[in-house]
Length: 181
Image (cartoon, rainbow, N blue to C red; front, side, top):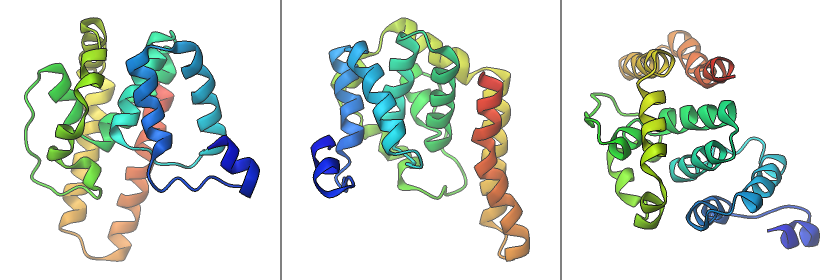
């Protein structure tokens, strides 16, 4: 990807290689390279929405590096991108939502896509860390509001009423980031 950027001035990564690198770094346990890659990724893809498995790997890598506020924010980002993944990984009840969320990444079936090697690379202490954050008051409050917003959007057709809801949904992660710091 670095070579491509030097050669043509941008990175054309329609296949998502930038996400798979996170997977590999987690499985290999290479924190030195992870630190370097995360900095490079954030510089080169500042507006990238990411994908849930990448967010899972990033949160665990940051936790291993001792960057707790960034790790919690990445975990919160993961939670809001797929409400089923953390409960599945932590052995909690995975309840189906009554509302359709805007991305296929948010589908319950998406959690079946996680490679076994990634799950095997996550320690029991890391699962406990995920569960503790997921069950925290902050995460519960924002998760609840996230779901409420999409329930309201499902039955609201007026642009005037939808616009503030969509804006609020986008702000939730920013608000959680402040609380994670």
